[in-house]
Image (cartoon, rainbow, N blue to C red; front, side, top):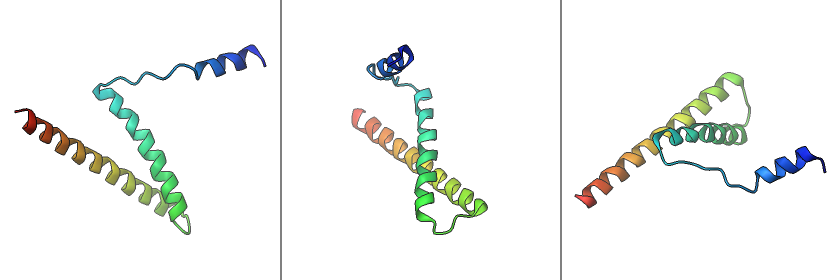
Length: 83
């Protein structure tokens, strides 16, 4: 095992810090994009570039909108409980 391999393996022993701030929510977007691409790639029987991209964008948008609506509802519920 080389020194480079040891450094790479050692980097996996320390957890990644994810802070609780508005910017950390942006990490959600690449995750949603990859989920949308993989899901549509497994569900569409015949993949054509235009229709595939359209389906992925629609799924990506619907997931993001649903999560925003859910966050707003939870925020309002927490506000009502604490008031």
